[in-house]
Length: 408
Image (cartoon, rainbow, N blue to C red; front, side, top):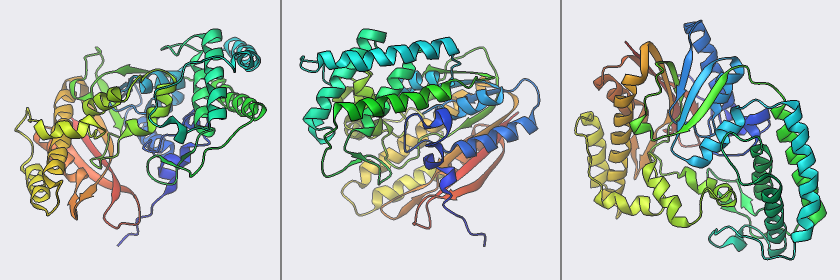
């Protein structure tokens, strides 16, 4: 039996020091190395007219790798912050623009000190005192105001986004956020940073961001906001799909994105986070969980094996077994809907590669790779296969897979 390793190089950890891929940390982001391998395989399969689709853009890893390789790519995500971030990562920037942003940064560092004692805007983050000390928070609020005065609020397709990305990184670097687990947790105490220290942090981070932005992008990748279950027609028939959708494991992506989204005003209040998570496949944050109780499926043509595993979860002896059964049902229902709509967006012979992970509920294993493969087969896809990419943690049964298929 072949030993399957955890392969940290196939996780977000590999991305942290890689040019644009390391601008902002997001634990669920999949590995640049894995995407590069899949894109290289794309080059071997089809030398001409390659157009890549990623219907679950996330941090735009697929789009950036595709564009750096010289391909064209369209990406979709339901989260407006990720659409903004992805477009900033995939864009090309002139030396003149980078020089202008440096000049703006030095003015920001000088000007924010004049606003330290003002009543500056504060993000509506619940228990914000867990994140930053009062002193550090006062400095961050003043810096944000200076950035707005100098460059305006974050906007799509605007080079000023590079400064905002540096600010987002600064917000996390000065917070009590800890990344010792799969998702966000907190250190015991907040730190007090002197203004001079924060100045150095900010300029160092911006130097890293602008340094990576200097490298030109050969291809063209663009991120659009859309629900992957109802992909709009772009007039393009995609030759390849390379993506990593959410896993059915109840990890909420928006939970880790909240600090960035509040500081950039993509989120204003907690209810908006719950609404967005309800719209996302696999979302379980806040109201997304409570709404599962009243959810009714629109499709009944799912593979019977999906209903079998849902019944097993429902019959397990746990107070939340019915809720989790519905969660798993909705996940595979939504993915089935996605695969159904996707067919009309694909070129003949299109190659699909989905990086997914399995999960367990109350000791019952949910074989995501097998159930998604059954959905693909039921919808007319061909040449369906799965291979193990890596072991995800110490539990022997949890793995990450690459599910492949073709559309004829």
